[in-house]
Amino acid sequence: MAHPVRSSPYGWEDPEILDHRSAPVPRYGSASLADLLPALAAGLEVPGAASGLELAPADRVCVFLVDGLGWELLRAHPDEAPFLTSLLHTSTGGTGTPLTAGFPSTTATSLASVGTGLPPGQHGLAGYKVAVPGTGQLMNQLRWEPWTDPHAWQPHPTVFARAHAAGVETCQVSSPLFATTPLTKVALSGGTFFGLMPGDERMDLAAERLAAADRTLVYTYYSDLDAAGHRYGVDSDAWRGQLMTVDRLARRLAEQLPPRAALYVTADHGMIDIAPEDRIDFDEDWELSAGVALLGGEGRARHVYAVPGAAGDVHAVWSEVLGDRMWVATRDEAIDAGWFGPVVDERVRGRIGDVVAAACDDVAVVASRAEPGESSMVGLHGSMTPVEQLVPLLELRT
Image (tube, rainbow, N blue to C red; front, top):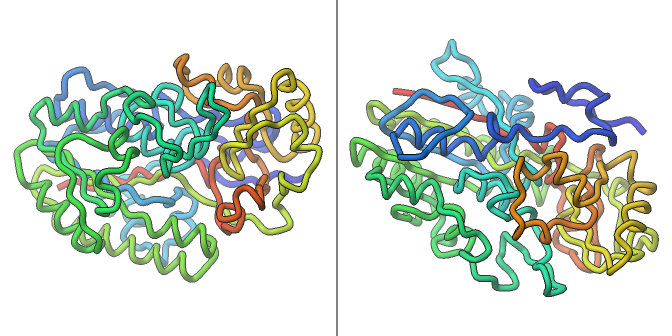
């Protein structure tokens, strides 16, 4: 079975790395999403803020996070994103480099990493859907179903809250739909939330708030690119049209930056289209479902929870059936390899599957009956391949 080989500044193009033997672990501590806000907060002189990611200080900092804007996807579409592409090059006044999203490369996990400055093993949002230990239930951490006390689930303070406490004028400019969600509370709260639907208005307000004080930290977010990718795929006119919109919004924001400001454009994950013939249906596969009590995660990054006493057998079967197309590890192997970060808190261990399977090929394990909506999506993400894992960090300063 041939594995996908895509260019990467971190050596992921090496086919000996991009195979089932050794997953390319995210660069926690030096070049991951979890390192971004601590680096910016350190530049704003927030006490205790530190990061292995080195960024020049700025008095006014804006982070524009575009859901689903992978580094590989951006580089493949210069015509649809001329402004963002220009930020890849120092000759045009910007700087661009990739960060790793973290594992799994999915929205809830990545937003928590951005907001807390911590890897998944510490903030605990370790997947799209994970087990609530001791309950026999899965929790959808994007929709927060079933309800779980947010601050018990993720007790660490956000970088936004720490910056606000240190006197930095801090805010989030996003859709009003996200104003009071549990995910916002545990990952993105601190300072003031401003809810606006139109993207143009968000960019205008973000620029206005950036100039509101001598030290400011502004976060703004756009989700429609990700939605188009899931529904139509990243090889669709709808997705390309959304990328053009993102490019226009980023330019609009950049043109209004106040003095002594830095704009960072980044993302939570990339995306890959998976063909119907490359989808394995867990609900119809007696081998993969044998001994499994709960199937968590998502198509390209599965948490597999075994019935008592069956974890070894489940690992053996998943390795035999999928081992040439997915990285398959036991819970302890995935933790020891650093998939979830250098530290996994004890409260988080039970949320991780007895078996963890991450796609290294163009494949997905779907569940047509249990997850009809997710199984019908064209574009998917979650694993550690470059097209999913690498996200841009584009910088522009005034």
